[in-house]
Image (cartoon, rainbow, N blue to C red; front, side):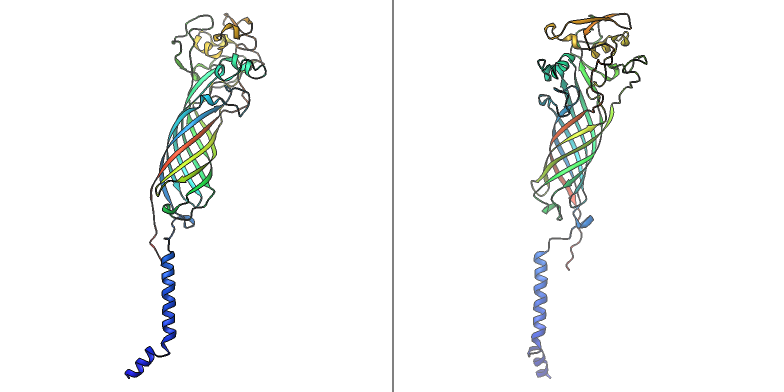
Amino acid sequence: MAFFVYSYCWGPQAKPMLSSIENQSKRIIKRISSYRGRKAGFGKNKIYNAIGFNVSALNYYGDIAPKPSALSSDISFTRPAFGLSLTHRFGPRYSLQAQFMYGTLKGSDTESADLADQENGKFRYQRNASFRNRIKELSVTAYFDLFENDATYISRVKWTPYAYIGVAGFLHNPQAQAPAAGLNGEATGVSEGEWVDLRPLGTEGQYSTLEPTDVNFGIKAYSKIQVAIPFGLGARFRLNEVMDLWADIGFRYTFTDYLDDVSQNYVDLGVFETNNLARAMSYRSNELPANELPPLQSYTARNGQTYSTINGYGSEYPDNVRGSKSDRDIYMVTSIRLTYILGATFHKAKFR
C-alpha cells in the first residue's frame, strides 16, 4: 500500500500535477506584481474633489478701448482678481468646477487713446470717458483634458492641456470719478475725484423723458446682474500626490454693453433737468485742456440752459455716437490656480 502511494505521488504521474501547480503559481505572482488597484467611478476612472485658490489678471474689451476693434485693449489697465473654487472630477478627461471670483475692470479714453490718431483715437480721446467696475462672478465651468487619466488620483498624469467652457453670473457696478463742477460751473453735490455710481444717473437718458424722435428713445436701464460665457485654454501640472497647478487664459463673453456705462448716443443735456451730476458724467469733453479741443459750439437745451460742447458730442443728433451698441463687452481672465485634492473613494481590491 505504501509503495502504491509513493509511486502515485512521486512517480511519473506526479509531473503533470507539479507542472500545473507551478504554472498557476506563476500566473498569481504575475497578477500580484502588475496589480495597480481597481479604478472607481464612471468608466472605471477615479473620482475626487479638490479645492483651489487662484490669482488672475483681468483685461477689458469694450467701448473705452484704444481703438474700435474687438481685440483692442489697454494692458496698462490690467487689474488683479482673486477666486476660490471647488472642482469635481468625474471622468477620465472631465471635471466640473464652481468658482467665485472678485476683481476690477478699468478703462480711460485719455490714457488709452491717441489724440494724434485722426482716424480712430481722436474721437475717443476727446470723449474723455473713464470707468472702473468691480466684478463679483460666480461660474460653473466644464474642463476637458487632452490626456486621459485612467488611474487613481495618486497616479494621475503629470500634466495635461485642457479646454473649458461654462456659464457665469456676475454682479457689476460701473463707476467714474466726478469732476470739480458741472458744465457751467454749477455744483454737482459730490467732491472732485469721488467715485460715483453711474447706473443710477442714467447717463444716456435711461431715467429721462425722451421724445419719440430721439435716437435713444425707449432706452432701458441696464441690470447690475448679468450673464457671461467663460471659455478658454490652459494646462494643469501635478505638483505632488494631492496638489495641482493650473494655468489658463480665457474670455468672458457678456450679454451687456454697459460694463463701462457707454453704449449708445449722446442725449440733449437738458433732459437731465436739475440733475447736474448726471449731466456732468454724461458729457466730459470740456474737462480736457482747451488746446486739446476743437472750437466749441453752443446750443440751447430743452431745460432752457445754454451749453457749449464739441460738435458731435453732448447733444441730440443721430450721428452723435457715444458708444457702439452693436457690440457686447468682453473681459479676459488670465489665471494661476493651486488646487488641493480632498480625498478619493477606492473599491475593495479583487484579483482576477
